[in-house]
Length: 246
Image (tube, rainbow, N blue to C red; front, side, top):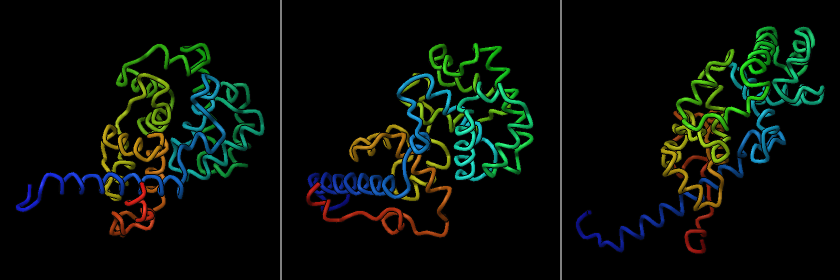
């Protein structure tokens, strides 16, 4: 404790920090958005079919391509009746390439079409065509990551993108905060650990998944190195009156 500072002073400072952190978290989610799945109309909390849809989106996220292009491409696929990886397995390679091109997924169209067909075949062979069964079969996080990582083309990036929005849905989806989210949290002077960040989310009346997704969005769209961060970051603005009325 610093000289002259009373315990009540430190408690007051701690409360002020918690309130400011929760306000920054709320502002960030309101400004940049939360879960990518919900933005696409997918609610993984509703059950297996929604998880199957989210698995297809996560597959599209796995390449070095912008999030907006990946999401636009999913919407094109969905309109064509390709809502899941299993659906993709019922189309031929040329049709998938055409749909990917329509969404702007041009750079990786051939490779991704082949990958989707291989994924569909593997999931059919190993899991009766339903990737969602993994959440019931495997409750250990490391084992679940290994099983997903063994799917064709599903490396750590795809696996973590898929699992982070399944927190609280699958027991094994309690993955650590991703590097991008942790960097953005540090930039905003928010805690970079899942447990501490969860407390901030709870205080802000947010789902941790929405806060983590918003942090990922910040890391993708903002020059973290060129910004002073903390309360000076334009994405961290909050109403200081809430320090009184919160």
